[in-house]
Length: 320
Ligand code: XMP
Image (cartoon, rainbow, N blue to C red; front, side, top):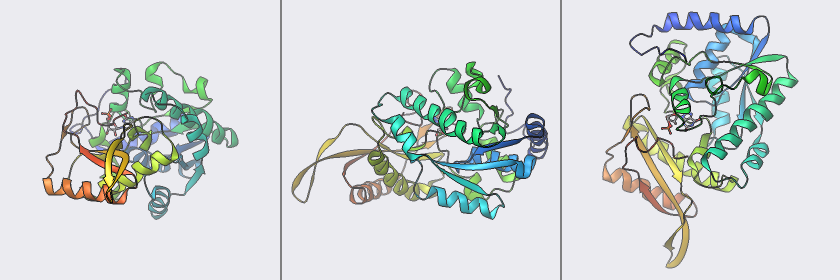
């Protein structure tokens, strides 16, 4: 397994120079692809890859229908400002049909992995001459997958899966010795704007990691609206990560004097350094009240809002 480069050991300039060499060595004279989700890890890999390969790297944003509000437009425009062209690949139909009827967390993760790596990327690679995928796997992803806690959707080699054999292309993971704090430092060094390198973490399975039970376009839309409210309201807290989760159970509520059997949203806000352990932020009560009122008034069908008060462990940061 990869050794860890701690934040104290990390020299971003040397790290970037070494990784540029590693990427060039792995890709040789060929070309590569990378998927950019707009998160910290994939944004850092995009900049690193373009530094190493220039036009020989094609960057795509996979529109899987599971991303946050306005995300494709935002990512395309932020990277255009950095001189990186991002192609948006339409794949909503493929992801939602793979997720249809699935409620088990690991089955949902596996469906997303297969759709992403086998179907969508397999197709892009076949249609291009790229033979490598650059991706932003970090050490925390590997740890939790190997420990059997969660199958992070981007971990293969460490599980004995050869991507070349399984999907027909090689995977290069230049960030695999780092944790989130190290990636932020490297991202800053690579010239990412603060709104990207300081961004809160967002999971590979995207909003599907925040829908308990079946992931349908309608249910994702509920969690997407709630996410947007939570991210705006908690942006100033300095917390490590915050999110909205849609529960599977519905509860009896009332609206305009009538019974309304509706959805519940759980809000989580975490204090953490590297995501290995975390505790809930002690948010001011007024802020929580404002959140509850905004979510119940602006997200159709939501009648209940809860705030998580448990730590990781035994919880995990994401709910699926
Ligand atoms: P957990 O939920 O395992 O998350 O405590 C640890 C950190 O990793 C981020 N993250 C993921 N989490 N599946 C996950 O469950 C993924 O594929 C993934 N990718 C990133 C998560 O948001 C948290 O910061």
